[in-house]
Length: 344
Image (tube, rainbow, N blue to C red; front, top):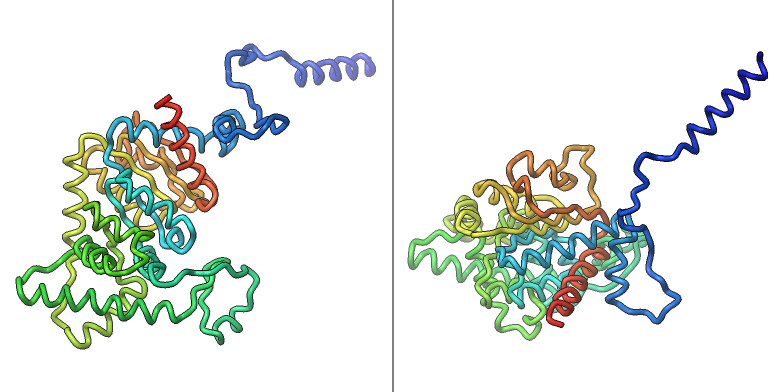
């Protein structure tokens, strides 16, 4: 009796493990990676991401959604955190701005000031493991494995004082209180005199009349410089309240909108909240390393955005989890590849 029960239990265990499913998923896409046995082909490599699985599949979906945004002539609200301008992602954002692929830009103070600095002198590659005290003694600031010497900020101080002076003179002359988008235009216009302007996001935003908002511009060196400027001119004002009116009106009046958010923070929420006023964006691509378990804006998933009405229920949308210094260049490369294939 005992042996029979044991054999029966073993058979049942085997059947549970090896039971045939009711649906064998025969018509579903096969999971398969890129075949490096053949000569390398960038197009085939990008296409292979879809079948790779995990975040590679989401990245491929993001490429397709980006393509849809463009084909649908959606107004693309593009948000990025300051570390994107710290890194080489800056030049890719500049490209999208120069080519008028994005329609609205929102960033942090660091995204603006580091863009300005790089028109004068570059940042350099360093090490994640460098001794912070040693760097401090040498006048070097570290962002990850990127070094930013203090002399860059000496240049920024002179540059921004010129900008603030020009804005202040206009304020005194006309009585107009400028918003942060106006501030960015003053910056872009002044950059027109600098040799390194072609690499600048701010320059091309001004040149192409693409609104660039920086609602938290006091949170950084721009604010530090402004502190001292206001000691001399306490009546100087910048109207941040006007920003919400300007960006929301753009969203309300757009026929179709898309969101691309690199990282989280104020830029992501600023563009998502503007789209709330039009019952949500039609497209959305989130790219971040943050997760939603802590309830942060940075980690919020697409479905959370839909719950607030910031993204339409039927929107084409995806979240790609990963370091944007890797995923975002691939996204743009994928867009260019898909557009090239369409032209064929």
